[in-house]
Structure formats: structure tokens, C-alpha cells
Image (cartoon, rainbow, N blue to C red; front, side, top):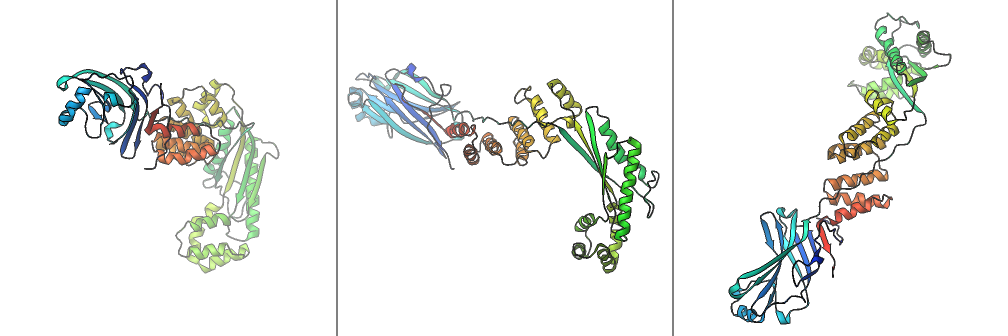
Amino acid sequence: MKRYITTIIATLATVSALSAQTISGVVVEGFTMERSDKYVTVDIALDITGLDVASSEVAVLTPYIVRDEHKVALTSVGIYGRNRHYYYQRNEELAPTMGNDLSYMAKNAPEKVTYHTTVPYEEWMDGCQLTFERVDYGCRGLAFNQQDDVLIERFPLEPYIPELIYIRPAAEVVKSREVSGSAFVDFPVNQSVITPSYRNNVAELAKITGTIDDVKSDSDVTITSLTIKGYASPEGTWTNNERLAKGRTEALKEYVEDLYKFADGFIKTSYEPENWEGLKEYVAASTLEHKAEILEAIDSDREPDAREYYIRMTWPEEYRTLLNDCYPALRRSDYTVEYTIRNYTSVEEIEKVMKEAPQNLSLEEFYKLAQTYAPGSDELDELFEIAVRMYPEDEVANLNAANSAMSKGDYERALRYLAQAGNRPEVVYARGALEVLRQDYEAAMPYLEQAKELGIRQAQPAIDGITDYWKISKKSIK
């Protein structure tokens, strides 16, 4: 497992205030506890110059890894008085220290003792303590004094929680919006006069008028323009189709103008004599036997009439399919209603609009309201969800929604939004923050290092936070 490690001065919340000297005669000058792959390593530096051991006594200093009912003794340091030293030389099997433990006769003991211990890591050690204990033994090996202290309250540290970076969207000076659709208004053959009762025209014309009415019904909205583009199918001659496309588009414009009394020039029109692009899209998505050949013919440099004739004569059966199933849909009118929305200034008004007509809010207005909600609250999360639903392709909306999802612990939702958030520095950092929260520190580090290089100041604390997770150290406290 690749790891990234530095030594830190641990906080007093994690490391005991050893200067209080709860173990007499011993100064713990420093220690390091670190997990590396499958092992936990503990290094301790002791000053035992103040340790006074009587001739018939032994002082044993032992660190322990402890959690609940689990307890593992690490390397012990035994300081033997003169008589005890010689006694245990003759009775080694009874000595309180043995094997890899460090043993000294009191008068020959060094002033400072350092040692290094490694034990296998076990799952129960997640959240353990590192304690330090002194036990004194007298005659017959009986313990008569015990003192202990906690060096580390919790190992590893509580998982680091990275700061999440929300971006304030740019303000819109003018909130311009548009809504579009397509209407398939039918006309009698070769005619350009609208008959509302003809075939399905009631429903098709209602698409246009309904869109206009929906926009006009909002008192906060002002319609600024209406555009209509008419299309004819390739059936027949180009000259006739051009006449029909132009005439029918103009007829639809006049129909709408008569209903709404729009000013001259308010409705803008254009037309496409033959909708070859629509035909191409249909054929490309079809299962026609000669699809490839027909597509090649559509893309050829033949004149439109020659092109249509070639397809009709070369593949008559498939042409009939196109005539019946495709051509009617090619004859359509695309319309777009453009409008502006007034700006909202008070958070009370913004909140009301968010509940009733969220599509009227700009991202900056959503963000303004967000500043009044508690971080991590359900209300804030819902706000960013609504904002990204209104602006699903906006990178800032997706980033803010991803951050909100992370704050709620919904990492899969955050991942989906980050996929739509682009690659600005804040997004690179957010991808690292997500991996930190998922405690995949190896995956997080490249994102955080890149974010740091891109100038994100929150990246370095995050790097430090995950680096310190599996290593706690305390320097000399003399």
C-alpha cells in the first residue's frame, strides 16, 4: 500500500499532556506511533535519570496498545536494583522482563533509553490508545506499585474532514431565457392557409399558443421575441417546396400575430425548403436494408430534386417507408419564445420563488439564499439539488451539488455531479476531497497535489490531514 507520511506535533486532544509527569521518575521525551501496511510501529524515547530503584526492587516500564478488552504489551524496560539483578540472573525464568525487553542494572542504566517496537496490525486497533505503565516489583516478585498514563487517546486520528469549496456563480445582469418546441401543423395539399379545424391542427397550434400563454402568465416575465422556422419535406420539387415552406411559415406567423397582437417585427421567421438533415437523422437511426447507400445518396452533391428522384427510383420500397413514416414529421414548424425574468433581491422573495417557480431563479440567486441555510442541513442540500436540476449542464451548479452531497455522506451522488462539473481547480480539489471522505487516501493524494499546484489553498491542509492519519508523533517536552 503506497503511503504518504510526515511527522507532526499531535494536538493535545490526541496526545496526553505528559509534562504533568504522572509516572514518577520517568520523562517520556517523545514517541511515534505509525501504521505501515500490516504493522504498527512504536518508537519511544525515555529519560530515566529521575528513576530511583531500591536494591531489592525492579521497576518495569511498558507501553500498551489498548482498546476495550484488547491489550497488547510492547517492549518493556526493566531497571533492576542490585540484589534483584543478581537474583534474576540466577532465576531468569522468573524475571519480569525477558527476550526483546531492555534490562538494566540501576547503577549502570543509561540516562536516556530509546527503543523501536513493531507488532502486527489487527482490526481492533483502529481507535486504540497507546498507554504507558510503570510497575514496581519487590521481594518474591510481588507488584506493589503501579502507575499509568495515556500517551495517545486515539489511534489513528479521527478521519480528516476536508473543507468543501462552494463557488459563487456569476451574477446575470439580464436573466434571458427561452423555451422551444415543434408543431406539426397540417395544410391541404399545395395550400398555405391555416385551417385550425383541419386534421390535428387544434392540438398542434395549442403547442405554440400554450407555450406563449405559460410564459405570459408569469408576472415576473417579459416576452422579448418569438421565432418560427418552417420546414418542408423533400417530396416534390425544390421550387414548390420552397414556396410551401415560406408561405406556410408566414401563415403561422400571421395566425399568432392575430391572436396576440404582437408588434410588427416581434415575430421573426425563417424557413428550410427541404428538411434533408431531418431525413438523414431518421435514416441513420433506422433499420432500413440499404441504410448506408441511402445515407451516401443524401450526402451526395446531386441537386435536391435529382437526389430525391435517385432515392425514390433506386429503393422504391424503402422510399415508400420514408414517405409514410418519415416525411410527415419533416414538415414542421420549430418555435422559440425568448423572454427575460426580473431579478430578485431579498432572500425571503428568493425562497418563495424557489418553492413556486424555481426556473425563474438564477444560480447566483440560489447561492444568495444558500448563505442563509445551515451548512450540512437538509434545506441546503435540497436547494443545491433544485439548482442543479434547473441548470443540469452548468459546471458550477454541478460542483456545488456535489459538495452538498458529500456533506450529507452521499458519495455516489457526489460522484455523478462531479462527472458533469468540468476540470477547474476547485473541481480537481473536490475529487480529492471525495476520496478523502471515502478514506481512499491513495486515490485522493494525486488530486490534492494537483489542486495545490493549481493554487487551491485548502489542498495542503487536506494533504496534511490524510498524511497524519496513520502517524502520530510527539517531540521532546522537557
